[in-house]
Image (tube, rainbow, N blue to C red; front, side):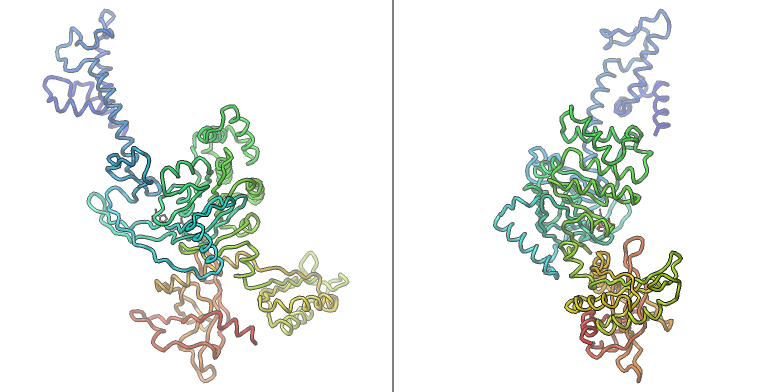
Length: 623
Ligand SMILES: Nc1ncnc2c1ncn2[C@@H]1O[C@H](COP(=O)(O)OP(=O)(O)OP(=O)(O)O)[C@@H](O)[C@H]1O
């Protein structure tokens, strides 16, 4: 770019195209580029002042050719006029292209946006388009209105629908999300760009939820669940394609509503949007001014913010040299500056060390007072500690909603009992008097038998120091007497410590993610390979828990064999197989599929069949 500029300047200084020999059209085209005119202007001034005796060009004489100039086709006055006109021309073109070229979220205005009255009046919605300039967006297919499976999600949806229909305004509600949907349009790229076609993608499929004031609502979900898209719709970064949301009564679907919303929200986006050349202090001063804080308070507010996020020592250093954690802290401070009524925090603690993260949690906890906070995170611990309510999304839908305890008791496997045995600092077993003896093993066996006999559960994890049991909710009624007896026999069984708690939020999250994966893989037919103990490999739907293995029918196992598959999340948040149980006979209450479904048409792989978890688990409890 620079060399092109140098080239055109050089060409101009050699006389092209400002000479009688050249066509006027060339001169006009050449003059549209201000550096060329500037170069010609400097040339004329240089020629007029090249000797001490030269008269130069006075302001009054700007419209005349210099007396010794023989080939004069442009005067200084024309150059000034051209420069002023091209300034406006390029300025208007810059504004126009800024509006029609898609931003980083693929959002742009239509090519003829300036012809629409709504653009000039500011009324009539927030009409924008998506996709690249040389693409023609396909029409957006409508989403079916599907009733949620979960009773709490359904109850929330019914409440919001009822309030929306009756125009009920609940003063305790900060955000009301009314069937918010977002479909990224499929595009057909034509002409100037490579010819390709993509299908529309339903990223958010109609969410109905009320978010209260003075509360933190945490949106959880695996990668690609639609969390950031939801936040982007609520903050106006990307336009909604269905439904609406009201933030303090202002609609995100209208440009007037959105400009009011921007005044009362603070956003910490998933990726830091900072200027490398500005320091933390300059960032905060800038955002405080944009949010309209009185100039006299900006300095003290910025200093307080910097202290809160522990960036005082780096307040004058350029943000470009900050670590990832420092940048996130600065983004959190920017989101909170100006006392916004609603704060969106999209994975605010990503990349922070545990000490800094705890510190930021304290800031968020403190910030809850007087505002509504919407947080997305992949840290279950963060969600558990900070949230008043949690919603878990998967595949664009809200799958469950409630407090952490409600979700754990509803979707977790039950209670976790940890039974500890005395060990020394090297991890060796001790007896109850503290002497080094390998007494734990028989005692652990007796504890296992005690659990098996009373609750019919086996340990999920075990080592010398402890045994962990998962006790299903169905056994809840037995727990009081069971633990009273276990405590009475603590000494006899060599137990040093008993802990009882609900299963973790992580387990709830995995259960919901598995369920969603299973739903979509059955719809799309996505299969993953599972290698069973015999070494054979079968294909199973992603997320399936109990899977029947085709071809295992024998006289010993007339109904065939099945396995329980264990899942975990990989680094990208996708579900992957972490292991499986030994093969066990398929119980009689499971209906077996017809033989030809194990080898779908067009594939040579053996496909395991999914067995409803309810059939297996209920049977285990009944036994
Ligand atoms: N501009 C876009 N065009 C097309 N599809 C998109 C666009 N932006 C996001 N998506 C798709 O929408 C889905 C939801 O994305 P989103 O970023 O909301 O997920 P997320 O839940 O925030 O995930 P993560 O936890 O990874 O941030 C993804 O499948 C993503 O590929």
